[in-house]
Length: 279
Ligand SMILES: Cc1cc2nc3c(=O)[nH]c(=O)nc-3n(C[C@H](O)[C@H](O)[C@H](O)COP(=O)(O)OP(=O)(O)OC[C@H]3O[C@@H](n4cnc5c(N)ncnc54)[C@H](O)[C@@H]3O)c2cc1C
Image (cartoon, rainbow, N blue to C red):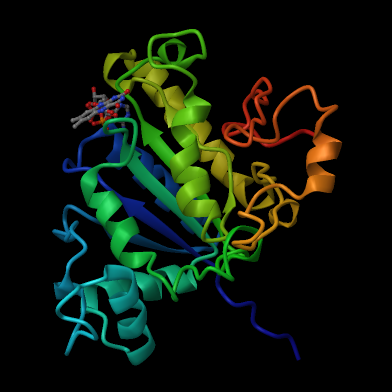
């Protein structure tokens, strides 16, 4: 008897106010391309949902453990364990649980995500549900899921080079790709960057969307970006969570640092946060 294949799911966390924006077009391309491949596609349209961006005690139902000194992480972990999270947070966590692929679609705001998406990150990726101190990075809770940052910029590509006015885009990507996604265990795929659509000719904008569509057809076979293996570090307070001495020794002969941030005082590995390693 043939077993029915479970339908795979993708989640698009989307933050733009306008349905005729370039971001909306990029979202639509992703919905179409993934649906065509047989995926169930969930979209969290954060502005349309009026998604709350601030992490507060309203995210918890019932009594707080320590109302005198409110500690968000701890209260959220206890509430998650007891099923007392607010409905909007629970719903997003449920969507995330189902998804093999998560696409964050947004315009770059202040070198980062818009506040409403930062709110999603703060409120949905909570302790216990998305990470613990034992379950992080290579041992992270979402290690079987892939994630992509897909975003538009106001700046051109040349403005984000190592010798240009905004500096190296790899440095900008590090906090989101390592500090959020990889920390929670995600396999981080190369970011999809739509450079300066507002000042690009219509033909270039169409090409950018077509390239995105094309990429999505092979996205599940893509190799993730490379990060420092967690086993390189002594994950103890005694060891300061630092590189193990034997790894440090081996790194002496490297030409480049391990990653954009684990640079060890050496030149940064080129394109570490923008391209998967070839070998
Ligand atoms: C608070 C704030 C902070 C910011 N910080 C930064 C920053 O740090 N760095 C930086 O680089 N930028 C920054 N920006 C700029 C921002 O990133 C850009 O304005 C944004 O990325 C542009 O994307 P959009 O979707 O809003 O473009 P839109 O203006 O919506 O679209 C661009 C063009 O694409 C067209 N378009 C729409 N749909 C399609 C389609 N289907 N096919 C072809 N064309 C289409 C639109 O009509 C328009 O002409 C910031 C902006 C704000 C408001």
